[in-house]
Length: 193
Image 1 (cartoon, helix red, strand yellow):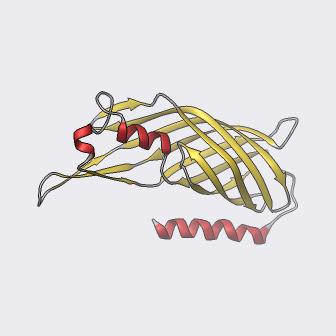
Image 2 (tube, helix red, strand yellow):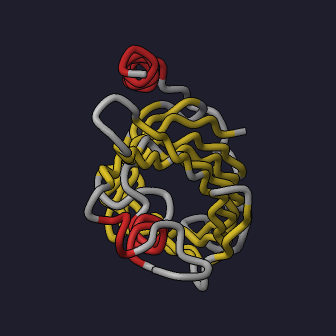
């Protein structure tokens, strides 16, 4: 996983060398990797009973590990103000619960997260190779665990500050984010067309 993430970052950083002076693109696709989807992690870990995933008694015996959340965004900018974009994203995560049931046996309990968000993005600063942006998204999320679907009461994302860097076609991104796609540093690589 580290090699894939490192390769994606190097690929996106190399796009700084290939900036083009073509017409500004109106659409973009962005692949993101984030850690710790805040709402989903809280819901899966601490909501007890139905539709809770881990009971209060199990919580003290459970070690919770969160694998990265992956998301794919589509954004469209062709409006009267090209600093404003609308779009959506689809995200997938795999938090994994490990529970030791005896000295020699370890049980694994895997939870899958699926998130769909409608988003708006505002570009605060637009230079040739760098853009600063903020983003807000609302939508639906659900957790699949123990062979049942548990819908979330709310899903969303708030990014007060993010940066996109690279050429007008291929770019990388890094953002401080809070929400369903990750709640720390979220990194990505994208393509404008």
